[in-house]
Amino acid sequence: MSSDNSILNKKGSNPPISFSELRDLVSSKLRIVDAYIDINGTPTFIIFPENLKEKFEKLVFRVYEYGLMPILRMENNNLILRFREAPPTKRIKRTRNILLFFVTLITIFIAGYFLWTTNELWSSILMPRANPFGQAAIFSICLISIIGLHEMGHKLACSFHKIRATLPYFIPGPPPFGTFGAVISLKKPPINRNQLFDLGISGPIAGLTVTIIVCVFSILTGKIVPEVQLAELEGMVSPVSWPSSPLLFMAIFQIIESFNIMHVPQGATLILAQTFLAAWVGALLTFLNTMPVWQLDGGHVARAVLGPKGHRMASILGLGILAFSGYWFFALFILFFMMFSRRSFMGAEPLDDVTPLSTSRKISYFILLSIPAICFVIPPF
Image 1: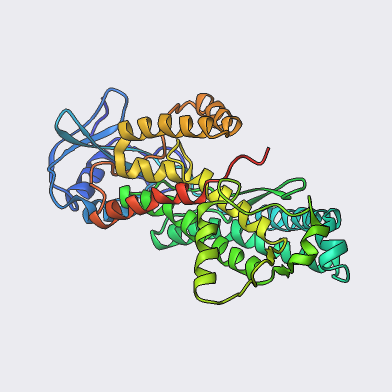
Image 2: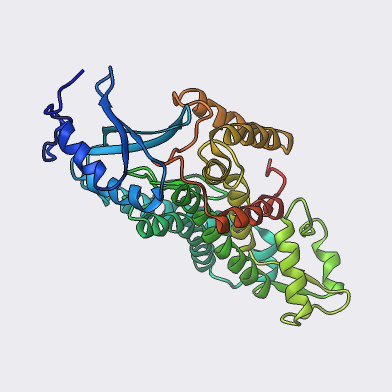
C-alpha cells in the first residue's frame, strides 16, 4: 500500500503526479465515493454514476498529460475507475507507410498487367489495340482506391475523435490481386463505445462506397457484344450472377438498366471491363471485414453494440459462418491469431465500457448487418 505522496508515473518523461494530486484531479471531473491504491499498486476510485460520458472524456485527455490511462468498468454494482500507465507517446514515422504504399502500388500494377495480358478475351478480341500498361494503371487506381479509402475511413474517424493512429500500412502481394490489403495501428484505445463503433464502421462504409463507384465504372466501360459474335466467344465469357458475384452488384445492374443509363439490345451481351475484378475484390474484403469476429471491423462494431459477452457469441457465430460458407482457411487464420494473442475472444476494449452506445448507432447497426449479406461471394478457389 502506497502513501498519498507516492509518485504514480515513475517511467517516461511525463510530469510527475502523486496519488493525492490524482485524487484532486479526478474529483474535479467526477464525484468520488472512495479512493485507494490496491495491493497491486493501482490507483482505484469508486465513482458516483452521473453524467459520465463528457466528464470522463475530459478526464482522459487531462491524465494523458501525466502518462496515465483511466479505465472505467462496472464491478459488483460499483463504478470502478482504475489508472494504468499509458503507452509511451512516440513520434509516428511515415517513411515505412509511404514505402509500402508505393511497393504495393507496383505489385498491383504488375497484377493488373498480368491479368490483362493473360486475358485473351480483352487483350486479343475486344480491345486488341489497348495499351496493356494503361489498362494495368486503371486497374491499379481502382483497387488501391478501394483499399486505401477503406483505411482512410478509419483514419478520419480517429482524427475526428482525436485518437492517435498511423497512416495505413499497405501489404503487397502476388497476382492476381497484387495485395493483401492494408491496416492502420492505433496508438491509444477508443474512449467509449461510440468511438469504438465509429472506428469499426467507418472503414467498411468508405471502402464500400468506392467499390460501388468502381462497379458502376466497370459497367459503363464494358463492351456490348452482338448476338452473332457471342458464338465466337463461347467458353470465354462467364455470366455475372449470385453467388459468384454479390447481390449488391445485381442491384446496381438493375438500377442502371431501369434508369436507361446503358441500353443493351435484345440478344446482345454486356461484357464487363477488367476493373470489375477490383470491385469484386472490394466486395469480398467488405464481406470479410464486416463479419462480427474478434478484432475485424465487424468485431469492433459488435463489441460496441453487444458488450464483451455478446461479442464473444458473435465471434463464434461469425467464425461458423465463415467456415460454412467456404472461407474456412480465413476462419482458421483468425483463430490462430486469437489463440496466440493472449486475448482469446476478447476484442478491442474502450476505456469507458460503462456508458451505453447512442441510440442512433444502435439503429445503424441493423443496417450494417445487411452489408455482409449483400457483399457475399463464394470463395475464389
